[in-house]
Image 1 (tube, helix red, strand yellow):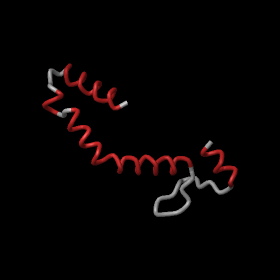
Image 2: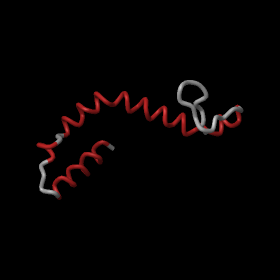
Image 3: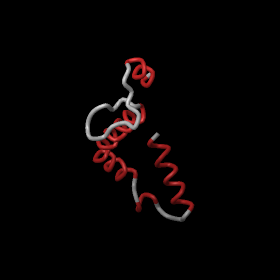
Length: 77
């Protein structure tokens, strides 16, 4: 998936006559992902919990909190 992302990025820059290796090389992208990757994973996990209604406690809660075991099972199925 990362290959598709970077290849699309390269194509867009090539169409604008720009060199992707000078602007934002694949190596720099991979270095940046090492830095921000853990935060992205946490944010994605939180978004899934909030969207599914499974976040019951904490500072951020789902708009619709699922209360029964049946509702919770259905949300993760």
